[in-house]
Length: 179
Image (cartoon, rainbow, N blue to C red):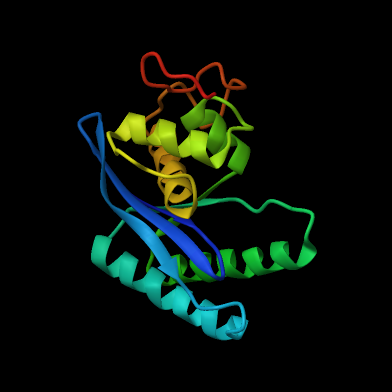
């Protein structure tokens, strides 16, 4: 199974492609996409994002696209822009026949880092440990890989549904803690 994880944004977005076979999961590729400056009209940035997502779908041919579900922050404008970016990704995936799996951010954190309130750095560090990726930093790329990993763990039935059990069934490398 091949999963494309995307952490959407309108200035920078992250992506990561994971593949699992025979119980082994590995990263095939990951990175970030610069979509323009804040002074660039939103329509142009969304169009650039769409083109990047199309290229990823064509290049990697994923079976699924994993995406964090919407969350509502304090800034309504930021939430609106994030929703526009998410819609762009979902529509593009549908156009290419790729099933989208939305996972709440706290569930992704709970599954891959052991705590629903884990920081971006903690998520990246523990995802890096689980996948053997040295130097993975907290941010868009790490978040994209984390959401893809969460989907894989759920699809493989590793301890039930992603985030189930309030953290008690989370997968951490031996000796690792979310802190």
